[in-house]
Image (cartoon, rainbow, N blue to C red; front, side, top):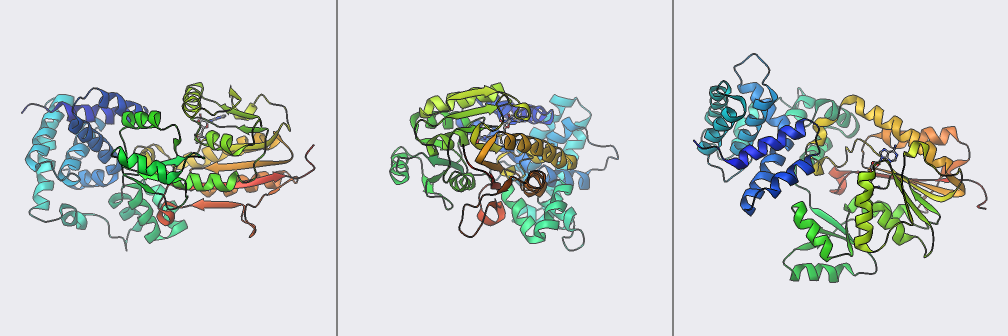
Length: 448
Ligand SMILES: C[S@@+](CC[C@H](N)C(=O)[O-])C[C@H]1O[C@@H](n2cnc3c(N)ncnc32)[C@H](O)[C@@H]1O
């Protein structure tokens, strides 16, 4: 059988992602090498499906494997791709999924794994038989949620066990299952319509150009579109400078954070610049906005985005926020949307959950606490710290704020609501959008 080059490309991308390469970049490069749109869709679905459902497929590999040895990563990726074609894609005939997987195994690992791959996939096929829903037929092979809830969440809903154990302790079994289920759905493309453009008019213009845009549910300036290949998305954004890509929950959070915002303002971890754009729009005319980030490469994206929407920061600085080159007490606003574990946005990064380790949370919390301390030092009396993460973990959210509040008596919560609310978490299983955390603090004292 001749090996299908698209399946081979999918395997290459998975292997690159395994080596911690940027998945988007690896997938974009592979997509760019394909002319046919159906091939490109097939490639993206193979890669993302195999990554999303990796925990479920690895459980099946373990159940059906008759080998004692650990399956080497290059063969595991062949099997994950094969299982995704058998169980997660309607249009691939079973025989093609199996034969192509055997050919792929031979191509990437030589002759030895071919019989193993063939035997394992044939056994899965036999176990499914003529069942109308292949997955239902395999359910009894997974842990029983009543006896081993974390094992069930990890294997059936395809997440690391340590992570679901954390979430289950916090949210309970049902809500954690719902969170995991949502993390496995392809997310919509959410865009923010910059004022003064009218979201209804923009939606109508997009519809006239053949793109269905529905209104967001959390924020009136949010539109939700079908997910796009990144090349098509870049073209859309070039045509529509009034749009920026931003999840609904983030849009709602920016609305609360930026209420009454004043300059001079610093965005300390600014790239690629989604929130810088919102900050720019919220500041009064002529108020200074500085954007800083550790990554010069990501700052180039911020500059390109600012050029596209024709609004950007007054100054862009490549700097480590833990030693930022600004005088203490210089800013009326410091936005800290720092580097976090990203456990709220796993639906957008199918590889992300497999890269996290239990110790990632504490490492990230320490980094964020250090950045928050520095951010606070840059605030003038009367100034506000706007704190945000796309993590669901309290260590990176409330705990960071409690640490800096305890260390500095001049800081106080800065409510955005008359009811005193100054911190909020958006949960994927509750709001249906990305997970996000936002909070505001205020440095007491007279503004000079
Ligand atoms: C969550 S992203 C920021 C997203 C951005 N605020 C937006 O809305 O587009 C976190 C950013 O922190 C930057 N970063 C990581 N460590 C940093 C540090 N020590 N100082 C400054 N920036 C840092 C990363 O390069 C990354 O761009």
